[in-house]
Length: 312
Image (cartoon, rainbow, N blue to C red; front, side, top):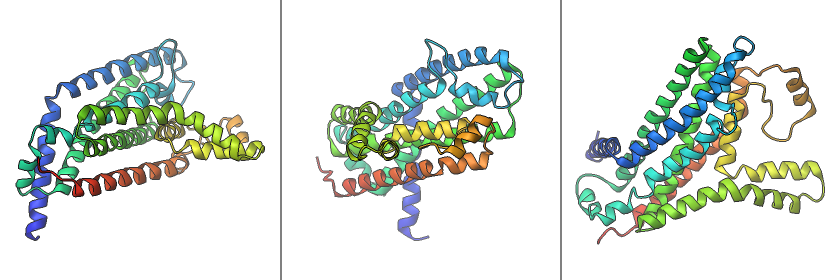
């Protein structure tokens, strides 16, 4: 191992441990954890109470805890799809510009810590923090399934729930990197936070409407073409990718995430669930899209940070 590799590994560990230390005592992280656990816990409690009367009638009871809702409390999936992006943005919007404002970036980089190591370390710290919080929630769901319903989950249910955990973790990491990228572009933390939240709201609320308008405009009047184009354009939104991935893995009877063919509709009517491997193949394009987007955003952040003037 040469000197550059040795110092890079040492610097990465130092930055990662420092980020984990900051998150463990950060009031922002504590508030987010409490908010996520309380809101998600309430939805799981309502879902568990609703499903207790159906124990033994459904072989995928655990998975229903994630998706079932009862007015006025939304489902666990609805809460997570709303709170995870906010958590990622809250952890990333001041990842770099706070170092500028505190005048610590120059001192950090004067040590044997390179710019790319600093970015990797901060991203790894946030990834680890979100992984711990989401793992606690995942274990909470498993515990609720066993406590309220008295039925141990099967191996396939555990595998599907764990896949949902991984997809949720990637979703949170994507929005953390978005926040970190804006923290590199803008020197003010408030500006980077507002821009990141505005982008999240755009993709969550406004892009589905824009996608449908574009689909109608370019569909040429053909219903099938318009529907297919609407699905393709809608998947530009990370929110659409995440919800489709979650439904595809948590609902075994889901046979298509796009325009439904007649053969797929027949299988759905018969109620035959897909094996775990086929459901995994169904969401694999979405999983790949998440990874590609994460790599793209991190690469853009890396290039901008390498070119950024750090002198105060």
